[in-house]
Length: 422
Ligand SMILES: *Cc1c(COP(=O)(O)O)cnc(C)c1O
Image (cartoon, rainbow, N blue to C red):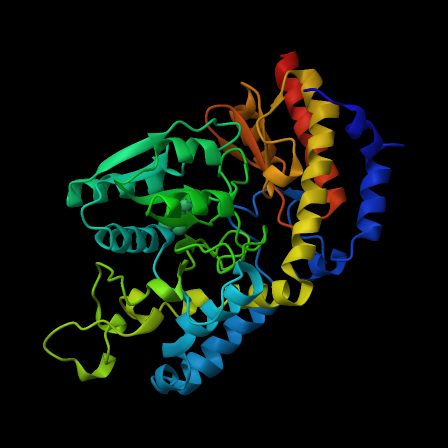
């Protein structure tokens, strides 16, 4: 790794003192106490996987219990009319407002990210008849690539691949080089799941629009950590996970965004009763509802939508810009420690060094990282591993302290040191 002038400053007089000072000055420090296992110290030694499965909040423990007893147990089927039917849209609006820069009536919760991406991508290509290509990149998350391959076959379209650098990501220049009059849709991730590269969403969106194409952004590794301005950037479509930085819990349903101006033009392929114009008429044929409702399909997954509400409320309270500022500080500190401790052991940074091009996680490559990760998990230090050689350090801003980064990175250094010495 290069350029250690900046990192030296960031670690003086010594890394632990720096971590404690950063925690002392952290305006979001008290949010950590709102997570299960953190205040009482029963949690893991260091959790670096909040970008894969966020921690639960104490508020959610209470909310889930209250729901089971009073909501489900007390209201029984009346709950649907009283509240639950509208939850996909009320929670969607709250998320749109707190973290996505999306005005009301454009965001819904429902289905897995995979299914939401499928529905929005299919709706988009069908809205560009005569255009034959979908643009995507070689390093997008597998589900994105697989489902677009399926759509291309269903609709007799061609996939146009951008070769993405696995230690960086897709640039506006690369998109400009491949879009044209045949492009129906461009599908990319804002934050690359492997490298953490932060794509230039407004520039790429403009380039796609200039070619007459629609754009679908995968926001799985951004929502709740990186500010997004879907309305201001003119984004057409977006989808993302709620179990990562939004702490919705294992398998909690995804969100989808459809710009208001496009909603009446698009029809999605899973024509279920819940997206119909009049849900309870149960008429002979499907007529899509007006507005965002037409993008849901089946019964809202109410239990799965409980926990995310507490994190959306915390982000609204803290402000997404403050969350991002802490995220940047956490990843800068982690990069400095990687330079100081892991580079001498042969590791290399596989994430952008520039903070403006980096999301909420940092990846460090070394041929031994698969074994290192397995050994760390045994010690309750939890990063995650991504092929080919990457140790991925996800730093969820509201639940991670700088001292936790210090503890976890110390363990990475020790384990990598032992394994490379052997
Ligand atoms: C985590 C992730 C997904 C996951 O999709 P699921 O349907 O929830 O399994 C999709 N895309 C990206 C970019 C991801 O990071």
